[in-house]
View 1 (tube, rainbow, N blue to C red):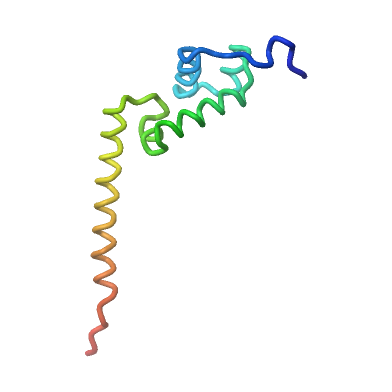
View 2 (cartoon, rainbow, N blue to C red):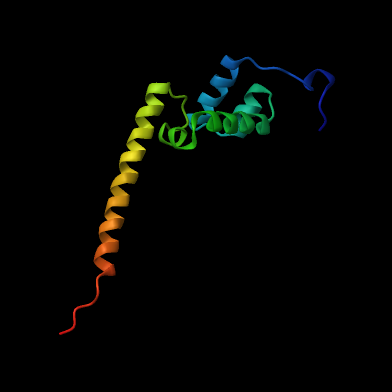
Length: 105
């Protein structure tokens, strides 16, 4: 199936892209959204990839795929940092415990 003449360089406005990405984020399969709207599934995948890159992978994953405000993204990143710091502290304590010389009896 080839592209028609008018389909080569179609531009979609940001609102349309956001709506498409919202539908996908709500759990609707990409192929179904693409079919319903008459666009290629790989185009939607490219939009999602670009959105993830712009938002940051951690914030994107924590948001469930929705677009975050800068404040929401900062909050998500702070929470991730707090978890990472706790994990680091636990690993430091475990390393100290397991690095001790065994006591001879």
